Length: 282
Image 1 (cartoon, rainbow, N blue to C red):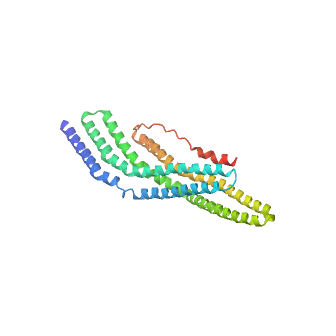
Image 2: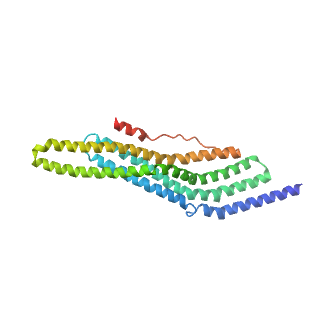
Image 3: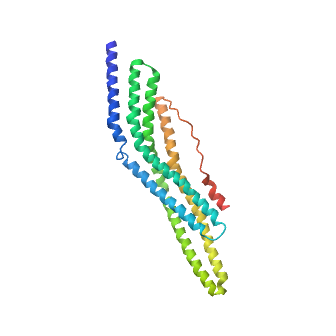
């Protein structure tokens, strides 16, 4: 009986050793390679381009609106300019996700999985449940962190696909607003020059210029609302979804394997800009 147990233990130890070696010298190199994550990296690069275009649109729109005469333009321009800070956060998270793609694969299959195999191999001989539980937790933790970014990117792509047209339209409207402001400034200069020559047309000139700039301010307010919607989508898909995926996977692991993986509670504070459009309109 003892000889049978010893043989089983030896076989299990050899299997664990093979798994650890394959993980270190085989899977680790594949999972941490850029080629393996090519599609996910491309998706993140495409998102980064959109975010950078949106950032340029916010800065350009804020500059254009600030150039419009009137007391109401500067607060509106400042509100739009503040939104670019949230886009910088999104870009930073995208870079961080690209780093995690290769880093988590390396950490998981070079360290966590082999250490888990080692602990379980020790458990085979000493039969301490704490070692078995720790080995399972390490293995599961490694798999979880390796899966978070690819899964969250896929889910984010599905959501962003529905809002992609709206975001692109917002960028186009921002560019149109900048062109309209430039055209109106040129027109106002011509009309002011004409006013110096034809004093009888002063009231008509002032009225037409005022109406044109008022329309541009209204466009700026609508553009602010569109920017907020677009940035909210990007923040949710880039920052919130990875956290939600993490908790979901942990929950699934806990149900299937009855393993408790301690996770600190994360308090999510919604960005302050969500109420800015309302403040500007008031």
